[in-house]
Image 1: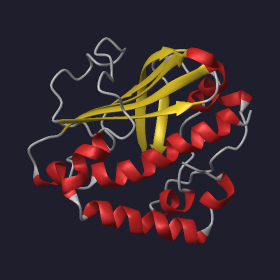
Image 2: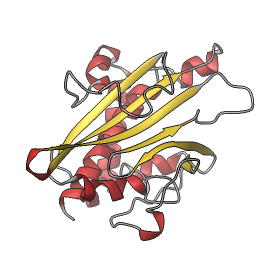
Image 3: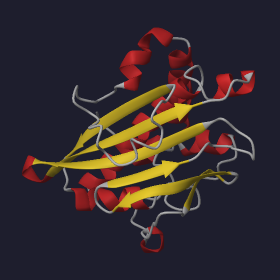
Image 4: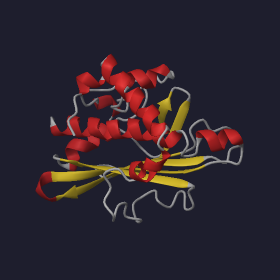
Length: 217
């Protein structure tokens, strides 16, 4: 798929992204395709780090993409993910409509390359997740419930896995697992009803954004 990071920030492309989100919200029958976009039948490997953090999720997804670059060209873009860091390489205008204050980096940020277990990576100024696993060049696993309070039954992981393949290429897997509490609010905002279609449009664009940046280093 063609990708252009400059066009990505334009108003017409932002409006088109919003149209896509609405279309996916209205097409639950495409959910199985969205939950496995780009993934092969044997992906993910159940032994990948972080898979044991939520052994019984209510729903999961695995999105994947081939990148014509070695893992060492891809990892820096993953290491600097986060609000106040390198952003998420997706639709800035949409993210900032809900107050995320995202600026997507078009270059590697030396000051945002260090990430260690226990660090916070923010999705929004008020929404942190905690780094649970770091294996530089191979895996970054974030753990926590976005918007979690002192008492919550919500739990999520958001993981990125790099798998080398022949010819100096690699596979990038975007892996998510989620549970939610019994309340109506939890079921609405942490179920597949809203999070999954919106996350698909934004997540696919993120993978394409990482691919384009890594292949043009």
